[in-house]
Each structure stands twice: as structure tokens, then as C-alpha cells.
Image (cartoon, rainbow, N blue to C red; front, side):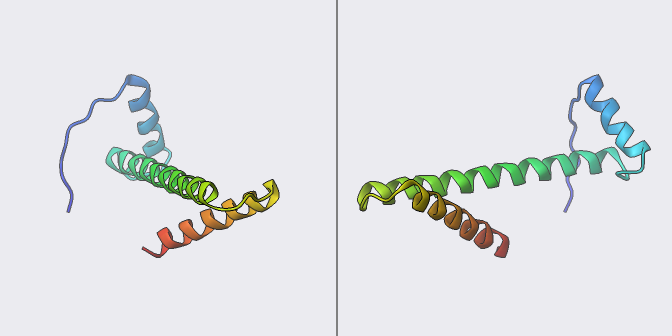
Length: 90
């Protein structure tokens, strides 16, 4: 379902969006705005997942034994990979 709405853009934003359409990158101004919102949503979700993983890691570290930096970094990367894979499966 699509919803019609009205938005305000600066002159520079409008000119840039139109240039993308004119260059054939997008079929319409609506498509440019939709893509921008999707990119923003993806960035926000990624940031939220990373923060959640870091908070969980901090909680685990506070409750558990001391580990060295290299092991901690490896654990962080593994946890972020799991979170991204879980998110992609949705």
C-alpha cells in the first residue's frame, strides 16, 4: 500500500533528487525519497543491533570472569555477526 504525503525539501535537496531522476538512477522523485528512507531505516536498525550487542556484552562481562582484549574483540565480532544473520533471516 502506498500513501500520498507532502514533504518539504531545500532547494539543494530538490535539485539533487531531480538530478538523480534525470540521470536515470531513479524513475521518480518519490523513488528517490523512498530509497533514502530505506537507507536511513537500514542504518538505524544496524546501529540499534550494534548497541544491543554491545550492551549485552557489557552485561555479560560484568557478570563473568575477566578475559583479555583479543578474546573480547573476537567475541564482539562473533556476536555482531550472529545478530546480523538473525536480522537478515527476518
